[in-house]
Amino acid sequence: MAVQDANLWITYVSEGDEPGDFTFLVDEIADDGILAFFDRIPIKPGGDLWEKLAEPMGEPSLDGWAVVLTPSNMGSAVVREELAHGLDRVMNTRGGAFPVVLLLHGLRADRIPPALRAPGCVSLADPEWRDKLAEALHVEPATRRATRGARRRPRESTALPPTYTMTIHRAVGDKSQQTALEFRPESGELPHWCFGIPVSCDSLTGWGRWKSGGIPSRAALMDPDRNDVIMGIRRRIEGTNYVFRGAGDPLSAEHSAYALFYGAVPKTVVFAHGDHPDGPPILDEQVFTIELGD
Image (cartoon, rainbow, N blue to C red; front, top):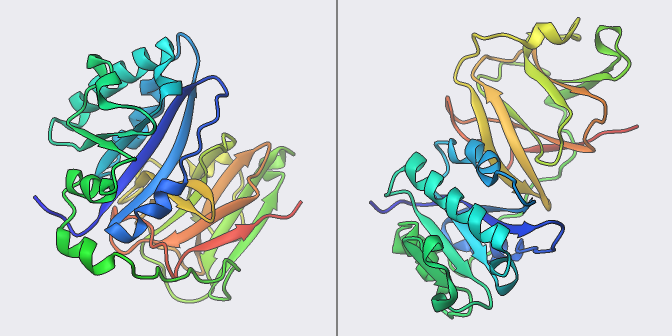
């Protein structure tokens, strides 16, 4: 069934520290009704690629997965084996109707190992590769025609607006390495909210809603009764990939959202409001990137 737009995860799987930045693809297809984000996933011999795929693939808002294949990563037996296993797990998890597309960069289709064959295969050397990718994702042609060539609306300033506040609480629970970021509206109520941290950040230890003014300890955020939880949505903003978490528990002057870190705090985070329960973050006027000081 055709859709108005689609959320696409583009990955480049490589062995070790081999470079492979295909971020430009995100901008190339932004006017085609496709909101994409890109990740390079390094793996090592004996690694389990599925562990890195499982969380994003479990996100209901993800409409498709694109895998970039090049002569370089196809020259690695480790990559070929891990990708074959990963493709099989994705198809079993999301079902045969879930769009999986191989994007070929400098590689002929007949050089793809049989174990890596996917329902969709698009060569980036094809002048019509954008249309073919959109078709594989079932994006309506009318959407592509209406947006093709249109200038994308610029994002608003990333400065924190006066309608929201962000407070840094250090040494939470008398632990010098614990830092909490508190978000709340200055007035009114925010029904649905989410925050994003860079996907490279591994110091987040807790998050949730609590009384405004700070949290006494990590235990304050371990609430199993969160409503309309959002987890795993990824977006690329200002050149950085963020993963979002949030809930439908309202924020107000009395209750704030908190993100708790142990050790390093990311230089930037994103705070957004959702448009409905379980909805993705709104990435235009209501997204705020926060620069964290020392």
